[in-house]
Each structure stands twice: as structure tokens, then as C-alpha cells.
Amino acid sequence: VLPRHMPFIIGSSIEFSNTKVTSDEIDTLNRLFKNYKDRFPKHNEKAYSFPNYKAICLIYNSIEKEIPLNEYLLEETNKVMCKVPDLIISMYKMAFQLTMLYYQYCNFNQRNVIKYLGLNCLKTIIQFSQCAHQQLKLLNVSPFLQIPYFTNDSLSKLKK
Image (cartoon, rainbow, N blue to C red; front, side, top):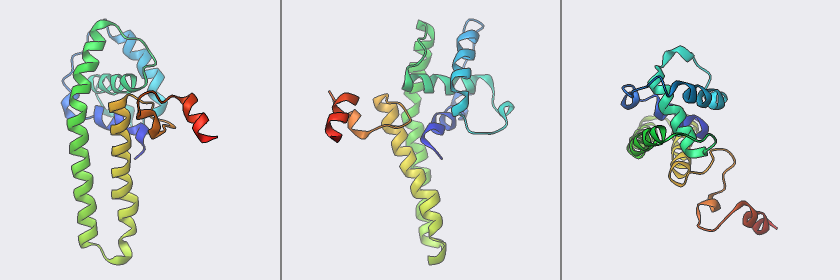
């Protein structure tokens, strides 16, 4: 799982399947969908409903702030983003339990599965959680940008 796929996983949850989609929102949501479609994992696009795609696009846009939204969609974004921390915690608990399960019951030779499945999944969830809470872009993010008054310019000076 990649950090850029996390909004898709969270937005695909059952919590967002009953989100209302009005006819006024459809143009904006189609622009959002076209903008973020390349970040979605490769799958059957007809597998999810339009309310789930609405939640996915609002999560992506909330983090990356690429397309300005009207007042109603900003309120919808706030409603969606209020549910995200609880879903992240649930994902973290599930990944941790899966990691511990593999660690207890797998042979020593099979423990590489833990490295590739459980620990990487935990790392991805934590990275996405940081990006969601700090509203940092999902790609090429430095943890230093979470510190107040740190910018890309100050990071480039720090690297020198």
C-alpha cells in the first residue's frame, strides 16, 4: 500500500457510501475526479458508488488543496475529514494485529512476510496520518514540514 492510495482506501469505506451527491456538485466532483484519477490504484472503476468517489476526491483535495471548492463542498469536506482520524486508528489497529498474528504463528523462515505486509502497512498508515493532520502533500513529503515555520526554502538551506 502506498501513501497516495490511502485516501482511496478510506474514502471507499462504508461510512461514506450514504453521502448525498447533489446535481450542483457533479461538475466540481468530475473535475476533482479527473485531477486525482491517476493516483487511484488500478482496479475496476465501476466497483464503487459515486458517493464514495466524492469522499475520495474530497480527502485528496483536503490534503493537497489543488482545486478551490464552494462553501457547501467545504462543509462536506469537513464532515468527511472528521471521520478520517477514526478510520485511520481502525486501520492502524488492524495492521498491528495482523503483524502480531504473523509474528506469533509464522515460522522463522516466513517472517519476511511481516516485513513486507505488516510493518510497511503500519509505516504507510502513519505517513498518511501525518499528511492528513498537517495537510501536507502525499508525495515527497519531508517530516520537517510539520514543524511550524519550516518551509521548502528552509529545508534546502538545511540540506546544504
